[in-house]
Image (cartoon, rainbow, N blue to C red; front, side):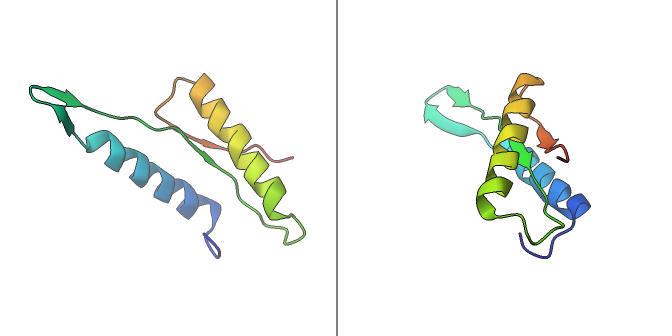
Length: 79
């Protein structure tokens, strides 16, 4: 999300997470399915950071979200 600051990126991820949790899927009659998602968010202030490093940071944040209880948004740590 180019041009998005950290607060707005976290807010967008949380809106997406909330929207998925609110969905109900009728896969089998009488047995509604609900989904949860975990999202890792990484932000780049330094244009010298490449896409691969940014994706790696988001992936690490995603796994931190899963370890932290799932169904959550986690911000990548600075590093």
